[in-house]
Length: 514
Image (tube, rainbow, N blue to C red; front, side, top):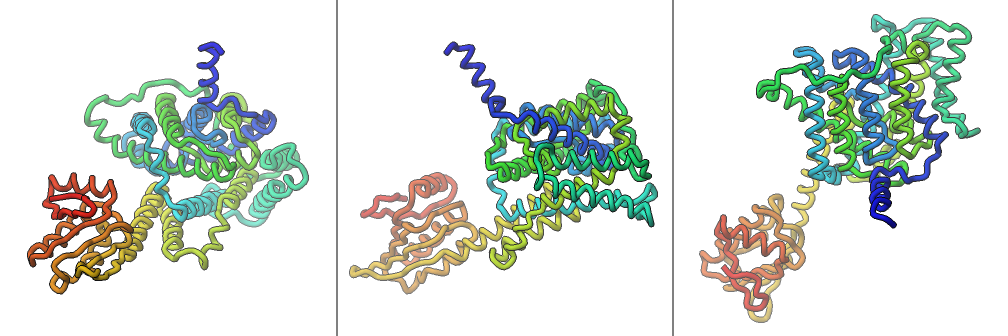
């Protein structure tokens, strides 16, 4: 095989274009996602205080770039509420140009995170946190659809208007639920949208449509460099927003990637996705978009339709732009009831119903973490904060549990030497219990502390060892430390340059000498 052919094969493998593709499923699913993206993108742009086209352009750029370069084929990205909530105050105070600059800077931070391979930090997110995140997001998706049952003045629909809208929503849900039991030739979500739209348009039913939210008519996303002063004052202003947008975007994207991985029983590439998200946000800011990240709702629509390749994401992005440029008049006639029913089914499918069965079977600490993350997600609408809070609580619980597990088996051998066999990790949380194990005044002249079943983990543990040996030395007694692992020995050697580590020579084990 020639060098050029080898390089081409590597390039194809890099972007996963060599996988088997069901073109019909990918195209139909992509079109369904494109339709579902429109009201979401418009709504999030309005939440951020920006024009609807800003959200639509972001959905196009984010969706296209991540579909081509991302680490998870089949995952959909676009304008999201998580980003909208972060930038709304900046949009109100300084206008859209500063938003574009913020999004570009956030993209640079995300690319940096991917290059530094920080995606592996998602391994630190425990399963209860993911459960809580997913359940909270499902509740948010469901609650966000309730606004569609209100009129333009924020009042609940009444009488026949409510009956018609509710009936169309239920019909949409029934089609999505029931059609796959009969046939999977066409995605059930697309068939539901087409059927309900045909009924509304064909019978002239008076109900809320996409056009009632905002006009989506526009052209190709305009290219321009954000019109802001390129100075330190601008950087100081936008950097905090950019850092939060980058963090929120990566957390939501990588968690969505993990969820799609579980559904498809395949494995995505977190660092590659981080780079793709960053590149997408950079281009989104340059092409007049508000930025965004992965969208769990649209990703689940895509995956549930059977899409597994990059083509569906590309079709969704290009289809969305085609609707904006050429099909706005048609798309604006689509009934919101159909899209509302679709998103409610997404919420039902997103919720981890199996997590409800864990309440009487899993540790109470895990249940507590899951509930807290769900509540923070629902009431604060801050997904990054919810995940961070969950990880912190889980880490503290883990530290507390391990702090209680340190034990010492004590015995005196035939030579009159007292042995302390330590079990469990010695770290900042367990040093108090560790110190309570020793009887310095009543112990014999020589003792051995055996770490065969333990590990010295951190500086607090080193200081604890230093103090316990120091206490024995003050009363003229000799201490040996045995079976320290290689990493523990290295830790003690490094610490010896900072603090006085009292480790006495062990002639039997030759561990370390002071």
